[in-house]
Image: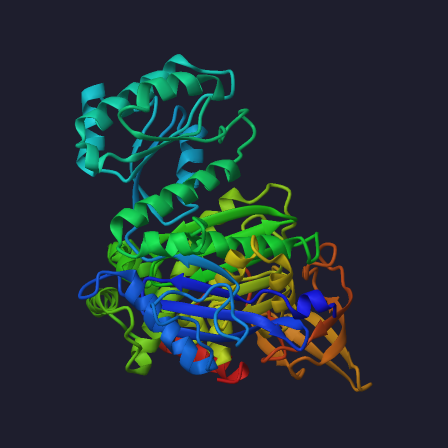
Length: 584
């Protein structure tokens, strides 16, 4: 390793979450960048502190105690750059997810074109669309203005018109937005993001600049057949940062530490997913799922093409109360192997939303929490999959595309009582197809690494290569249209030691092939009855090399889509059997 890397910069990353604030230290160990330690503390955005800076200081204090390294000087300021005695750090990055979702009014011309793009743009950060306006809206202009005024939005996204296309209709929408902004007091006026017909930018600026906090981004629909969200997403980061700076004391100071590079946690998480998609099998995508208190984030990337969805209503904190309708409750109950009434489930959701740090006190509570997480992941993937590129490889139009790997984060997964429960939650909610690897981000490092990517790309590469994430195991999911009990796959295994084994998998089974963590083996897959294991089509098999995870190699032949019995007793019997197969 070169001397320049031995003398390389250390990096401190801060993540201010809805519940916890984390301080993560990366530095060079034995000539390579490594994750060193993490300090955690409760986030202090709410009373009695009402200052996120206090939580940051507590997390830094914890990190200093763990490492024995002084990071903060006597003046209570971060020591940066590091000193000759080893104290301090050289570089700094930060991410943020705390706070209520930004209230967004989406404005577009056509509902299934520009307005749909505006909706998707809103879901790339911690935001929620509370009102929509389009050409199909039959309300009079004064009613539209009243609708905006009632919502008191944090942000208005205006899209519409291809570049050089519609102009008059777009300017009519701009007039409505301008009048609404004029009627809102100056201190409460929303941010306005214009991402429509670029030939109108001068007119839009003249109409709104004096009465709104205007941001202009490239068109999300430059031509009718093409959607481009990424340039506008960069503006969304600025808007999110500005909004949080107004809402919470300490955010502007944190932003100053980063050199005005503070980014949403979801954006940083997605950066890591996109990076990995450029490294792994180009024929498959990389999927990342983060189930947090503030939101459930899902990022999927195919050869660098990213699809990102952030869903505050699917978080395991305050957003839970949005899921109290009869249909939402019934969707959660279907995952429960115990008898739980809607009233009991509703009580649990209210309590969890008020006290998101609470942990399940009984096995029944644990099943409820895991059921809520399953439904959050399942809903998120169903929503985001609509934005996947149409050409992605898939073993069925209604099934999950092929991914390698799938990365999962969030306390409900990382702090589950056993790796088997984490694995089962992911298998149920995502229902992967073909062959993939399930990886657990047990220390919540994906977002800090994403924030570090623009500062020190080498650090990100080397930390990811250091087995910082925990491999739960390789998962093989044959897809076959046969009756339960019908053989669908034969597997012959040859380990590096030379030991050979074989097994036959039947439809409906969840089996584990023992393979120690880090040990490699060669698998020969022979699909039966035209089962598809993602190796070229139904009935096509072949050989592949796999590396064992905590659970070895898991074969999930329970069917796609997964169908659970309605009877709770039968469901409990199945779940206990599956958990036993997965080691608990």
